[in-house]
Structures are given as structure tokens and as C-alpha cells.
Length: 221
Length: 183
Ligand SMILES: [Zn+2]
Image 1: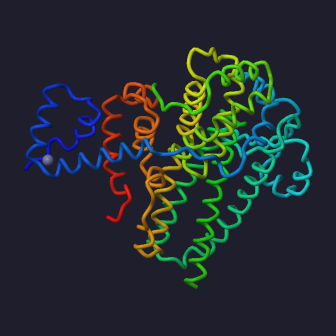
Image 2: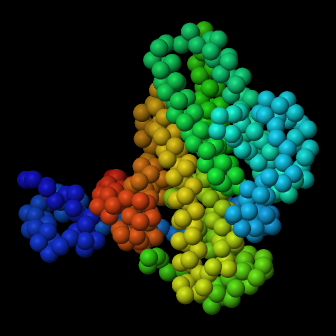
Image 3: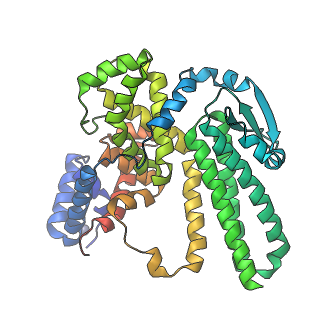
């Protein structure tokens, strides 16, 4: 039995086939138990998708949203101007060194911006919401940790077997590409909480991976 | 799009949207309360549990900025929903694609050190949606959960209707394994 219609069963189910194809599928279904069974399961998946129920977020997001309304009410086109206002730039190493001082600027907020070919720069905008501060300070802390772990790993790298080193290198390359893409996206939309969070999570993955690598080095020595 | 019917009462929505457009935050909070479960669930399924809170915030911020453009010729829930999808798709074009590769990369590392049975622990249907490849997940969400047509999905995702159909079938075939029961 050739199941040439298996790939069209969803279209059959959704009534997306023309009359000729539909009767061909029906003819096949009459004599093919496997395809009848597949069709039944596909129907069950569609029914299940309709039954999915909506759920509230685990925490109330309104307080965080209302804090952002004040700044976000300005049109998106004015974002660049707004960012240019009262802006102080730090390099990431400076930031790491001045980490404590930065946390004290709690009335303002920190925007992470990245020059195309330069080091990451963090700008402080005293008109922006407080929520962004922790995110960007966290990002800076990750950069420092990553530099530290990376240096340690280079010193100890010869203790790992080549297969492990290759997997680690591949994964670091994937993460680095993700970090670069997240930073580019943040240039376009620096206020996006999603993108800031995404970059933070990506950096955290890199820290995790480097820490796992460091554990492997310790275990191997 | 057709969408699933919103539980919220439309007349309240229209009045609150007009008040919100004039700067009334309490009216906007009422809109938030009525619609957040729907938007957050959408975000959770489109982007994953981890990113859903942030994406939901971004969607409501954008809605606040755009309230003045809501004319009331569609239900507010439909308008908000489409706006949220656009916010999420814009973010994902930049970030979620790399996220997908990242997940696969992490998987390789985890496989190296974990017993096989652990990795194949059973998942519920909703969690399984999140593990679909990005293209298949987005089409499945938009078509089977949100009620969009292939033509609309093609325009939203920048693919052909044929690709949308193929991705939908792929997603459904993969999800058969998570229908539950004692199989
Ligand atoms: Zn068959």
C-alpha cells in the first residue's frame, strides 16, 4: 500500500483540497487502515488545540506595565531623541569596576546600546523606568563573568578530550551568534523588555555552559 | 481572522479603549485585566514560558501607544490580539530564531551527560507545542489555536500558503504523540 496521501491528510481534514484530490483521498482512506488511523489522530490534535484554556500569568504584570506607561506614551519615532537626552556612556569593563556605584543610580535607568564595531556601551537615562536598570546591570555582570571563565578555560583547555572541546566550541559559537543577534535587535528597540530579558537569558546560558565546561576541566584533572 | 471568541464583554472594551486613548490608566487597567490571560497564553505558546511575561508587557505597552488608532470596527480583543501577534513576531524574527538554535545547541551538551530516559520523559500537550521547531509551532498556533487562515499566516510569517500548510501538517503529526492517555 502506497500512502501517497498521508502528507495531504491535514489539508483533507481542513477541507483545503479540490474535488478531485478529495475523492482520491477518500478512495485511499476506504482501503487504508493506517491512513484512517492517522486521520483520526490528526482530528484529535485539532480538537485538543481548540480545548486549550487560557491561563493568567503567575505574577501580576500590571505594576510593571504601569511603570512603563509614562515613558512609552511618547511615539516610537521619538525614542532616539528620548534616549539621546541625559546620556552617560560607560564601557562594560568600566561598568563592572563601577558596579556598586551604578546600582546607586536607582532613580534613573540604564539602556544597553552597542556600537556596530565597538565594545558594548551602557547609557544611563534618568528619564527612563527603573526596571531596565537591573536588566542592564545584570548584563554587564554576565560580561565580566564570561570574560573570567573564558580566560580560565583557555588556560585549562588542554585537559579536555577533543570531542568534548569540539561540542563546547560549537555551542559557544551558537550562543555567541545569539548574543550578537540579540544585541543588534536591541539597537532597533532598546526599550523592549522582551529583548533585554532575552539577551540576559542568552548571556546566562553562556555562563552556564562555561561553568559546565569548568566543571569538566576540574573533573578531568 | 476569525479567532476564538473573546470572553470579555465588547461594549465595556469599546468604552475603556476610548477612555484609555484619552490617557485614562484605570480604563486601560480594566482592559489589561480582561485580556491578559489570553495574551499571556498566546505569548507562552508562541515564545515559551520563559519569555511570556516580557512579551506580554511589550504587547500591552504597544497597545497603550496605539489605543488612539482603535476605531471600534472590530472587537477590541481581536484588535489587541493581532497587535500582540505582530509584537511577538517582530521580536521573534530578531531573537527567537537564535533561541531555537540555542535550544538545539544546549540539547547536544545535555545529551552528553544525561541518561536517555530522562530526556524522553513524557510531556503534556501544551509543553509539547513549545518544543516544536519555530516555523511549525507558529503555524500551528496561528491556525489551530488562533483560527487564522493559511493565506493570513503566509502574510504574517512571510512564507507561501503551501509552506504554511506543510508546516501545519508537520506540527500536527508531531503532536499526535502528546495526546495523553496511556499509550
Ligand atoms: Zn494510507
